[in-house]
Amino acid sequence: MKHLAALCTLFALTGCVGVVKTYSGERNIEQIAIIKGGDLEFAGNRYLTFLASYAPIVEGNKPESHSVGNSFTGYPREIHIEPGKYLVMTKCHIANQYAFPAVAIEAEAGMTYEIKCEPIPDQLSRVRAKVTGSQKSRSQTQ
Image 1 (cartoon, rainbow, N blue to C red):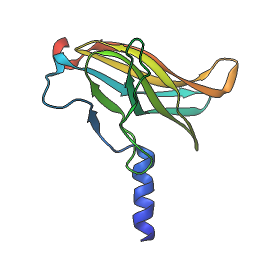
Image 2: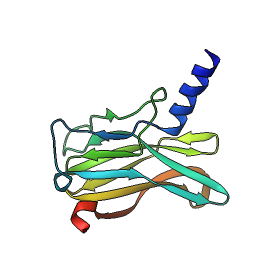
Image 3: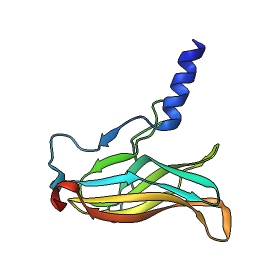
């Protein structure tokens, strides 16, 4: 039992959920956007970015959040999403601490976006999530 608890804890911390598709049915890569969590090394600390939830941003409506992970099963490092405006909640791990900052993304079909957690300048005890890159999805770049 002790080993099972340790194994479950390890999976929860590492985010071994895999890729989460946030839509039903099949789509090809040109029809969706991919959001990935990235890593950052800063001042001897490694900032790991996992994805916790997303909420479509609809003008005049309160965003409705959709969870893609949890503390028991873990958090994914990649989600596939339909094009649109979203608020993406991350789970940032820094050493033995974590935070849940959010970032807005206007996701376009066929694009891959990378989100990284980073310290806030002049407030190094706080962290934010930032879209650090975007590129055409793999099948469109070949």
